[in-house]
Amino acid sequence: MSEKNFDRATLEYALAELGRRAFAAGRTVEIVIYGGSALLLTLNREINTGDVDAVFEGNRDFIKKLAAEMAEEFEWDENWLNDGVKGWLSKRDSDPEVRALFKTYPSEDQPGLRVYTAKPEYLFAMKCRAMRVGGIETNSDIDDIKLLARAIGIKNSQDALTLVERFYPHNMLQPKTRLGLEEIFSNLTIGSESDETPRSSPP
Image (cartoon, rainbow, N blue to C red; front, side):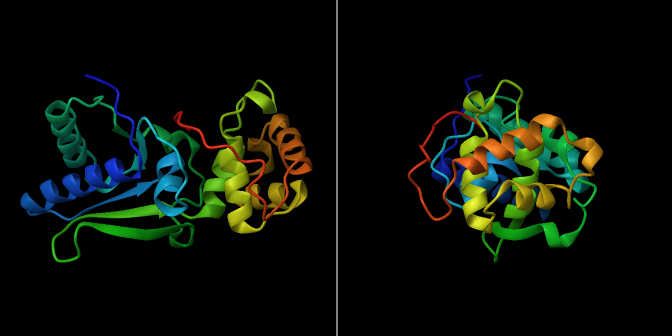
């Protein structure tokens, strides 16, 4: 099966189709979306994402079955919808304050799928914790961190670290997180888009 790159239009189509199939089966299911897909939906991030990071514990087998059927029918990667993000979740993940209802698919009159997204503060903390080893210049999460910092209004590395530690204990953060944040915020001007460059690779 071929890799599918989801822009906003194709991602919304996939979610609507998933919702349509769930509703046709007499079910209303819920998922929470994280990562690049959440940014694409909520902050209009101009990216394509290769998969959808989501958690769907309450209906896992049913949703995976529908996603597998869609992958086969549309010739998408079998893991286009996956829950690999679970290893990065905060202990606060079950707190309703860290997520928001984005949309019901295919419609409120036919509620097959309710999509929640992690709020920007939580996404920011997750992106910072996942900051990859290899130096700030090679980190593909940097543009997302900058975008989220602007959306939240974070202006310096200390405020950024304080926010991250609201979701992850200090002992869960690697030294590269603090160093990376210091470098990011030394070059970031809140309210300016000049240092953000669009990208098309997955987050």
